[in-house]
Amino acid sequence: MEVFNECFTLLLIYFAFCFTPLVQSVRHQYMIGFLFIGGMVVCIGTHLFFIFKDMIEQLILSFKRYRNKKRNPHLFQEEEEDKYSTTYKIKDKLKALFRRDRSEVIAENVDNSDLPENNEQRLIAISNL
Image (cartoon, rainbow, N blue to C red; front, side):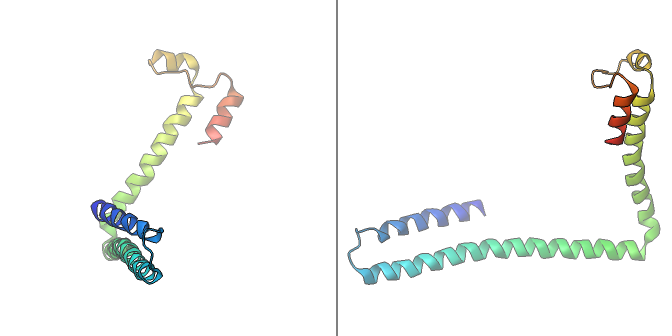
């Protein structure tokens, strides 16, 4: 697709020279102008075709996933639980880290440069999670 775009851009730049006084005939400039517009329409149309094709493929894939989840909910239940648990496991670990005393964190050889010094700063950091 990139090569197509580069070739069409190069071709259309060559047409731009024909709109200068090098071409004396206005009739020829109009004909070249229509060719230029046609080339732009082909280039834009090709890009739009591939954009819509990818969009329709994604919609079909999303519909199939939705339909499979409705038909076989037991297969996807674990996946949903894993997403939920992973996100909240990370948040729980961070909250636990902020609740601990700084000496415990130092003892675990964890980089403690980002830990707040007092409880007010810790509460602000936890609420931002």
